Length: 198
Image: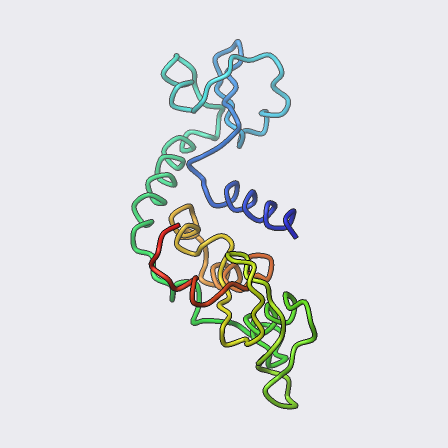
């Protein structure tokens, strides 16, 4: 489970943050600056390393043919994330818990079922709404048996995801992320909604 969370966070950082990259820009002896998007990037073995395209170009380098708009598009992408990051709203990640597979159990119910350490009990024979189970609070270690005392929270908070690139995703991708079982965990409702900072 921990590996899944770590993988999700790593993937989010890599995919969602176009302004942050671990790849360097390679300048060849002929003065061509190859960013990671260059078709010659992997083949370039002898080079001078730069942290950004801007630095490489400022040193007298030039971009490969066909990549003339690369620098301005990268700057625009970086600005777009920063400019749009402040207008987060929960509804931009969908209307709420989704029932993507149509089995009447939404992603909240499925998280409760998956994370209960005992067999859950449902409200009726349709088996849509979970009413009891056994969950251990990650905050306090308390055992909770009533589903109404549980909040389903996001391991990677939606606001954090928005500020780090989810603002550039499609509505469908944001809704899928908000309902991804790997990013959901059962927490103590009273503490999750508390204004106390630990």
